[in-house]
Image: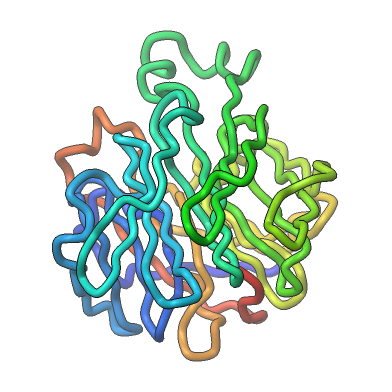
Length: 293
């Protein structure tokens, strides 16, 4: 098994999410700084001004270069065109609670997940044992390149990190509460079918993830200070150890072999909403990125 130790590239984040490698930079959302940022390979940060007045999460780019991002608390997807932010899609009818992760394919089809329920309140008032015994489910919303709702896929247990294979025919998504990765076939119009388990994962809360050129997935384990590399079927073939819990990861850098990991002490908003203890940590791995994001 491959073993790596990450180093801190940048600190001072509140809660970083949605890391994407785009145009030679790492882009990411920061929930509680209420903004979208990008950094270069040295960690120098730039803020995308005026884009995210609420709480941003998942990021993607349309084929014409426009940025899409999830506005969590009002459950919308917004579009940034030439510095102006506008509504792309209202997904509130399908969410139940906050919208969250999103991936946009090479053809401009976006896949938007949500919490489905107030996770932090549930854990505080009811507890993890009850949550795992009867996981709530929610929808994955499939949006066309113009923001039209093409499909609503039900019954996902906290849909989270997502990847699409280089040929565009398979989507793999994490179901955090169910500790598994699930796969779908992707049709020419972006709609999904043939749901199946891609990898069961004991004691791993699957969070943000990325695909490599060997067809394996690096994913953040929200329960531990680590990212794990997983082969289809569930074999863990690599581990990157971080200084605090990992919540998303992305392969980037010039060779696409730098694993960028978004870390924080916890995801509980009642504990970190006013703190800036989050970090971006990096490790050099052997196999470069592939597919989307």
